[in-house]
Image 1 (cartoon, rainbow, N blue to C red):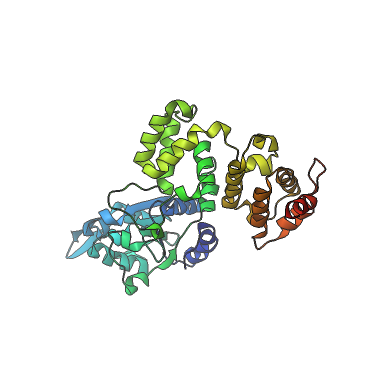
Image 2: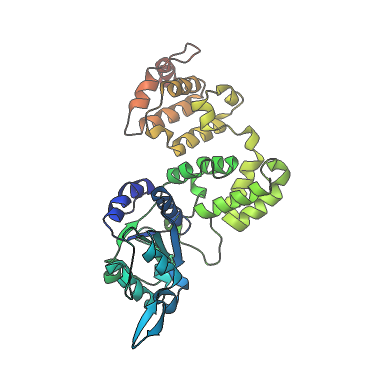
Length: 357
């Protein structure tokens, strides 16, 4: 079963503190490396990273030298560091390594030593691979890891949520990029169950959105997006693919007059919807559904803002919104809204009766 990063972070310390190596499996670009580096930062440990896919047997095992009548192995720099000091040893792309390298990693993960060199007691081992049970493994040109190999690892299949990324990305990507993903979850990344991957086609990923954001931000293209739509689109197509680039360009073009869920629910700016038609209201309701804001109980202020908006809606939109609120397992929001009164003096219950009647 795949887990999100919040769950992974909650349990991985138990495995690491017990001295066992951790293998993270998941799609490319979801933040596997980022979570390892964050773990190291939290533990105040340096990261020693090696891409197993680029290692030769000599890179892993080191080189022999003659010591009197015997031969000893000189450890490569990364291994010596992991033996001399406590570090987070991060072996990326293990499933793309040669069989000789993977056999050497066997010993490292199984007994915490390699060619007579013993890892420091505080050294922790992580590895990351693409694929896994829920990540479209058939889309990647990687070697299969047999049961004996996997048995040396504690394997976590990671399937992060959109909320994982939004929480992490807040303040790390441009606000316009963050708002776009917050309102267009489907464009964050291409999911394997959406038809697989076409050869040579560029798809969006969590990593490519960050790179795209860094690029347009450094070029200051989003300060005046309407003046830079061509460049925004061309860069977008290169980083996140054609479909996502088109949607983002259109979003950027209309960004100044965009009304967000936060504008309504958090800030109570109901006047921003004064000239809305039915389709505009429906689109805002769909954004609310996609935002997952209704999953948890809203504050008293948020309920009041929701009530103020609710009584201004066309009847069909109001009923769609009410149904959406009531669809959640936690019915506290629908109960609170049902009993609320808008600042105009109109009771939500009376408004519902008018619609139904």
